[in-house]
Structure formats: C-alpha cells, structure tokens
Length: 326
Image (cartoon, rainbow, N blue to C red):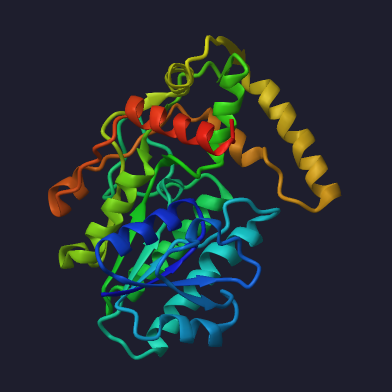
C-alpha cells in the first residue's frame, strides 16, 4: 500500500509514518522546503515538497497514493480566518487534488479533533451520533473540514477521526505541564476538576491505521480515546509521580486565567503572533467535561487503547529527560 501523509514531520504525523513503515507501506511525506524534518531523519520515505495552497504541488503529492492521511492543520491562529484557511480551505484543496488525480478508490482520512464535536454534556462521553457544538474558532474550522470530507465520502472512500488530548514522546503541549510540575507545582485551573478524555500517541496511530485498512470505516466518524478519563488535578499528580517529584497544588481561579488571556491577546496584536492564551481557551477551560466515547471504534474496528495513563506518562517523562527537554 502507498500512503501520502500531510503533517508528517509533526508529533502525531511522525509516529504515523513510523507505524506505516512497520507495516511495510510505501510512504510519501508532504513537507515544505522549510520544514523541520528532525523526526523523519533516517526513515525510508519519499519527500514531496509542496504547499497546501499550491494545487500543482498537491497533484504531484497525491499521485499513485492509495490512502491520503491529512494531519496538517492550524492549531494556533490570530483570527478565525486563520483557522478556516488552515483547516477548512487546506482540506478542500487536498480533496480537490485527490479528485483531480482520477483515483476513485483513493481513500482520504482526515485527522480532525474532539473540538469539532464540542464539550460533552452532563459529564457523559460524547458519541459520534450526537449533534456537534464546537465552541472555538478551531473547532468550528475542523467541523467545516469534516463536512467537506463527508460530502467527498459520498463518492469516494473517506474517514474522519476525532482525537481528544494526545500525549507522548515528541509532544510539546503536555511538555509545558511536565516543566511546571518538575518545578514542584501542580496547577489547578478552575479547581482542576474538569474531566477530559486522553490517548497516548501510539494508541492513536494504531487506530488511524485500522480505519485505513477496514472498508467498514468508510463514510464514518470515529472518536479514538482511552476508556480512562482524568481530571486536570489527577493529571498533575500522575505527572508528579512519573517525574518522582514532590509538588504542591496551586489553584488558579478562572477569573485570573481570563485576565491573563486579555494580556496575552494584547501582546498578540502587537507582535502579530497567535496568542498562547485567548478567549476560546478560557471558554474551553470553563466546560465541566471534554469526554468522548470510543465505543463505536471498538465495535466496528476492534480498536482498543492499550497504554494506560500512568504507564504512558512514565514513558513520556523518561523520554523528555533522555532528550534533555526536562
């Protein structure tokens, strides 16, 4: 089988590339000339240089691919239009390139986000059948991309995957929590009681590959998560144990976070860079729960997340230390 992977040099993408190679797939990676290829060095892959908004380069990238794994996207933007362009319009361009290639059986797999579904209701895990209610610009742009892929799936094989929070080696988002806890502090934003679904990157890429290999996944949306949820307080304590660090808890009220977001947004306007903390992030923190159910993937695909949170966080902490990030 031949695969094209966008976002291949990123956290999740690089693990997917490695997993595909382990399964003897031929892998082509769509990258920019300026992309950091650190995690792809030494791998038996083909590089296709191109841009999401250079259609001619996308035509060459998708040529002869049996499956297109679309992971590239925008997670931090200065405006809603940035997210729409990077997540929706880029997906439209990839779908057009696939259609133009003339391969009716070419499969398209979109790695979307739990944000497209929105927060869970009544602390119950969200299912794929429930109506979506994205509350952020990022989530809305991912929902738009999903709709485009669902329309594409009426004539071509296609699948949508919504991961929740993803952690593991190479991740730079959870790294920030590890660094804070390593200094002896467990932050508890809003009391730390918000429940979230979470998955280790290796379990996620195994699930992604299952959707590629099974026809029953065509035209479907799947949440891929571990059955074990966690609160932010529990995450902090598990990270402290993984690091072997004694840490004190530090409650951070939401009003303080909201004030910090205003300052961050102000600096963003001055610097022209996306704010690390904005009103959407605060709104996400205010939700009681971000839970999703992997029951559908378990039933149709035989998917099962195997790495529990304690084991996964220990593995991640060890990797961070070995590479010198902690």
